[in-house]
Image (cartoon, rainbow over all chains, first blue to last red; front, top):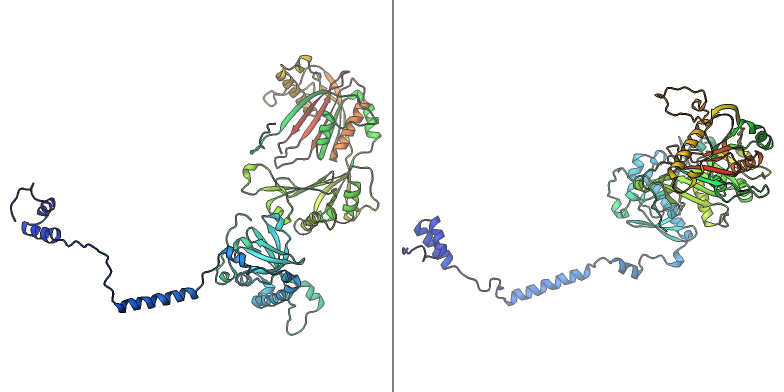
Length: 238
Length: 356
């Protein structure tokens, strides 16, 4: 290496000279700094050939086809405009939903089984994942006092509200927040050893199982509720 | 113009002192407006009333008040709100008779208390009962504690045109009475009017009649202060003098009502035990008549009218009425009227009111 005065050497060479031996410093300086390759167009695409271009076009077409087949979910305003979930005026009759309610009662007796007589934790766990379309609910307690007393059959169980049709054929949308709903399931008479119950014994049994749902803790879609594990929470508002 | 905001912390009871002149009483037209009369009628349910007179006036008052008029009666009955709002009780007592007073048992800040006065049903509810009842009401109590467990007041005018079966507002009340507020409670019932429906719808709930017979204590020897304020106290610059005078007189009157030995002329108590010193202006013999029960403000107004017309004009007397306590701290509101001796018909009135 020419021995120049440190003033004349470039700064990189001076610094390298401090770290390495003179031969090594010289080599690094020439290879990595002086003769460093400078890419003029660093992200230039590789030169295309026809085959690669055709393959690319084919893949793009498949992706677009897939996208067209999988539709995006509707937004709330689109849903409202389409009116997909509206019940038509002829359909807003309590009498139409009564058979649904009877079906629901049968379903509920089947779901609860023996626990319809005892109630308690087991019944609560089964009820938490049960379906409530067709149940006859009554609003028993609410932070908004005008909702108390609304009674009817559930026709839609959405994430935050129940849509209820009342006996006067009115459709009511009751939010679940801060509201307690009450349901009743009539209890079938119990048969013991194949003999029918006598009249006096029947009076001792309660005639229906009363269920109270705290809507505040119930704000899930019915589909999501099936797999949800409910834990008892301490409620500040109760 | 400028209204002060409602107090958000507990405020102690305040005493308002009024000095005035009672006008001439027309026996056919009992006065309702004006200071002593309006204050008496503005109280809601009176628990006890005391009348203090000089012994000389006792005979006249005895004839006019105690023997001429029957003692006030009230009833204790156990009913639920549903019995009041539906059925024959509602039709007879509330719609036809109208002037019934009822108060349910319980303390206002803690339990659910219901009261009925002039056809207005007032429900003092806690949060759960209010949310279950479904009736629209206003928040009750100091604003500072709103977040924790607010209480609510629901007021309903049962005499209105919309309070009939089939109307929406009334049906909501009936629903609430049937489902949410359906426990039977003990009520005090007083029929302020003179008509009783026949057959009595109250009879099926087996009420127990209570008569508040007046208790008379005679010949109480007391040391008497001067009951007439000096003329200069009443001018505008002497407010503190009037204040101290009225406080002394009120204190003395309260001790006489309690029949405390401290106001006896011969009382000798160690000032370490009691710092009160009875006034030394003279001695007198007094008598005290007291009623206790569930009394109506119209009755107390009538008593005042009777006393004023019965006793001679230059005799003094004092009438005090105490209401039922409204809150947990047992603060009652009270109204005490003292008519000064003299020909002017002047009176001093102390009105103690709790802030709620």
